[in-house]
Amino acid sequence: EPEVTQTPSHQVTQMGQEVILRCVPISNHLYFYWYRQILGQKVEFLVSFYNNEISEKSEIFDDQFSVERPDGSNFTLKIRSTKLEDSAMYFCASSPRGYNEQFFGPGTRLTVL
Amino acid sequence: GESVGLHLPTLSVQEGDNSIINCAYSNSASDYFIWYKQESGKGPQFIIDIRSNMDKRQGQRVTVLLNKTVKHLSLQIAATQPGDSAVYFCAEGNAGNNRKLIWGLGTSLAVNP
Image 1 (cartoon, rainbow over the protein chains, first blue to last red):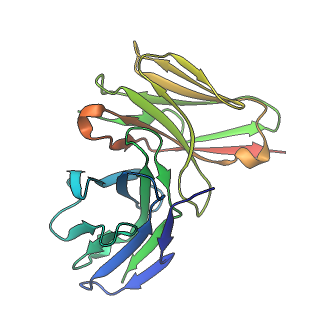
Image 2: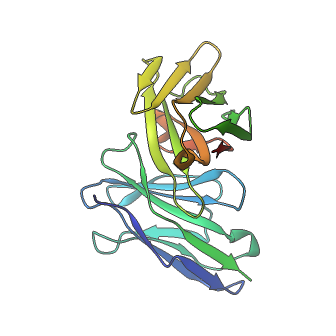
């Protein structure tokens, strides 16, 4: 059964450093998403991506964040200058047509020291 | 504003009993609702969804009920099993929001053998 994959599973970085979180969505899906979940809290929407552009982003997704689909298979989230409060689980999700069930990856745990 | 919340943060049931997890939402414009299950250390896993033109939908051992009058959503799990132990999230969506999901806080379900 196809699944969303994410790498790395755990990323530790120093405050101020750039990180890139990688995702490989399910191959025939058209809609892609990033969410984050701070430990013990609810899942928060960051950004949705369709047709090679951002379709919506939340207030969390400020200028420090960017997304890219560089090669038609990977979907990346970049944080340019990490802050302590960026520490969270970051989930990538994809959906065949949007609005239907979104399939989630296992997440990347980002720890900013 | 938009919000999705859960009535009970924790629920403990005996194996074999039925479980009911409740969720309240405040955005009348939401027209899509979804339940996810999240096991420890894993990404959210789709359980069942329902659109606003329905008030009930059944899956395998699960039933989702939607009451638009009181903006209430519930997930019923029949014959709860130890493998059902997880955190359950409800989320709402709206076609006007480019299919992003707004998530509730989550309910932890513990199944006692």
